Length: 345
Image 1: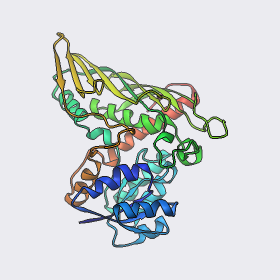
Image 2: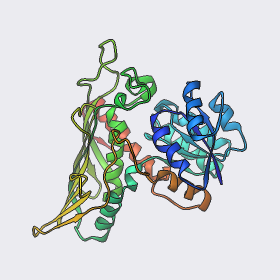
Image 3: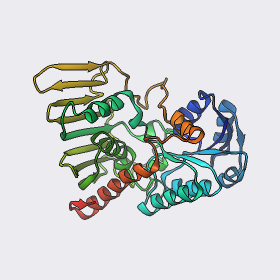
Image 4: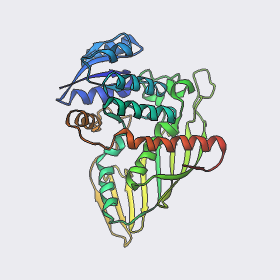
């Protein structure tokens, strides 16, 4: 049995981490902490666990085996490193950290401690994305020539725990990034995962087009972005992100290959569609992309992977050693946007 602690009790902790730990028979939610004591107490009431006064106190408790880090981006690295140094396994929310050095320090702490460090890149685990990976790896569609991936919704303030435009997501000192790293990290990482190669260069545009704080001033980070990614194997494509898709969420990808097209989550019934070069089509009724508006969300599989990694020693697609390479792309995109030039990795 794995005794876990949850640090940060906002929406992602409640809807994903706590809910999925509760349904995993090999885990016990033993501890919770949040800067808001009432929020932590509400989490403990609903899911169990002792409420701690500080994150440091929770981490120092020798009875806790592993922690989920679900706090604001700026605090991912220090809390994760502290937990690893105290002999805890860590599942950290994305984006991994706010600087490349922080990411590398997290990896170093995991290596030194001998504990597992996983990053919550749940899109690698969806049935449609796994099937797409299988098809691409088989060579059935040939190499990926180009791609287009979009992730947009109506903004984190619409589903965050306090439903306020004063959310930490909009503040530079807490979030560090805007929509590009919040949403784009998913699609950047997914393209790396599906194509099976690393990014060679990037060109990025970030913009704050609409989001405002309660006083009417623009938020401090981007609410829209467009990235052009060039892969080492020649694949070229775009990643588009937005916090201003007010009608409905869009979380789709298309990969244009030598022998056909892979379409992911374009159709509400068929999560994966293949259009072959000869015009024939294959439809896969696998799952439905979960959105932040879903009242009933199915398991992402992330907690199960974390538990298997810790208790069974299994290697997973969520191991930080690979995902740090997706973060390298994020930091290159930030550099590109700031310098208005192509950045080589």
